[in-house]
Image 1 (cartoon, rainbow, N blue to C red):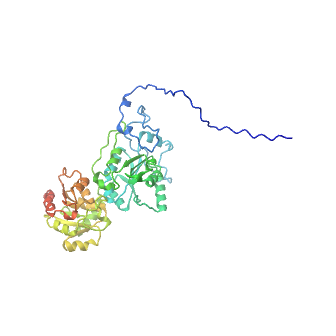
Image 2: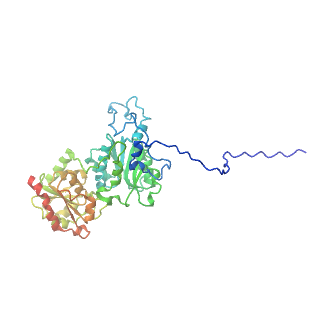
Length: 459
């Protein structure tokens, strides 16, 4: 009788659990010789980039010696020759013999930034306050090309900034963007090969994924101060936790955390200071605006700009962090009656406000219709001074060193948006005592008009 075949021998598993050993583990400690460099470590190098990133990344090697291969100090201007306009292959922006595949390695080791994209949330006011950050980028990384991604209203601000190469319209605050627009913008940013991308929008997992898909080397962004930021740190290189969910409420220094990180000392490069807000007005803008205010019946240097009338127009240029920043026309009429030696010029954000100004102030009132920050800056530049609420006009007046009177709903708001008003001789702040801008003291505003006496002497 034939015997039954034996069952095949089972295959032993590849990974066996080693038997428990009672021998204690021995750790070998090799003594290292301390150097002067290892003792001098900045606080920024000790800080972990993010708790979500590689747990075995201890930061930069403090004992590493940087020789002639990776020169220390700030980066130099781009050594590549200018693009040849006759070249049919316009995308080939590197000269002959330039190894494109290895270009990103020394840039990463040195920390250089050749191209930077800034995703700026908000309107005109928020983009205007981002100008010092852009100037900080240009000072810290010489030769860097700065591009901006912002809203339709925010893009208009960059006709006042010569440091920006391209400004594209894309609303980062839109929670449900069109899929075609979303993917097209990712492809556009990915094709520009940015070394760094900065974002002032509070990032959750969705916005962090958008920044991650641009394939930029350094992805830096503000994140939510609550549970909405969960998972965002996985896709970002550096994060800043906002103090609240509305970054604009922090006022003039709303980007303080990002500026502190960008200007940090790095090896032999000292800390880069943040310069005050400055804007540049082109000659073309000046010519267009000069024609407008001459039609209104005023001359250069002989009028006061009135900005911040109550309106539902988006061109009011108010901050997202101060909703009570527009004054009724009845109050403006009482204020402008106290102006001596100059003629008030009312800036209206929409033509429908013209009849209201003529009704409450008078038919002979000088009115200029202006909707863009560039034209507003040109008008302020040719004026003798500004009386404005907390709109972009008060920041533009300080940027152009023009005498100004700022009207605020409270002293706390005034200190946030014009922090050094006491040190400025040509800026006077008048705040309401009740916390409502409509209750502002008209007599205090008239007394503050002495700041325009210097301009009257120059006329």
